[in-house]
Figure 1 (spheres, helix red, strand yellow):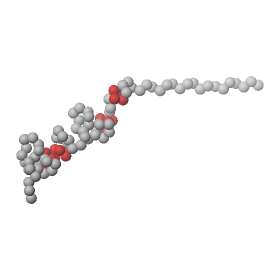
Figure 2 (cartoon, helix red, strand yellow; figure 1 turned 90 degrees about the vertical axis):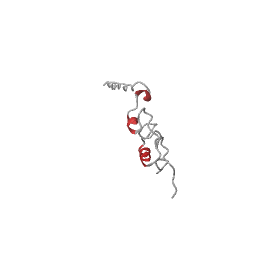
Figure 3 (tube, rainbow, N blue to C red; figure 1 turned 135 degrees about the horizontal axis):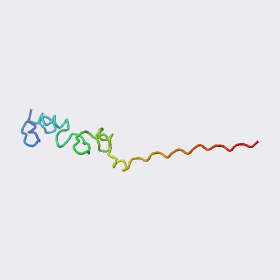
Figure 4 (cartoon, one colour; figure 1 turned 90 degrees about the horizontal axis):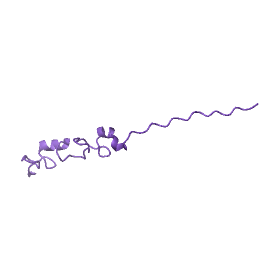
Length: 91
């Protein structure tokens, strides 16, 4: 069996196992801890979790910043009008 070459991670010369990485770097790649992640990562700064919707991970998708939702918080619903009474019938 021929050799596949050496690991493509900078400064590593171990034999390749998968995706051009040695066993240690391949494991890190699978877990998403290398600079070039296996999947698209959350756009929140410092977060390396997998995107689920709108370029955010599940955690950051749930708590969107107010600016992304349109700025100011939603206004309270208008108060309901008081019930209108029917005019009294004359006898």
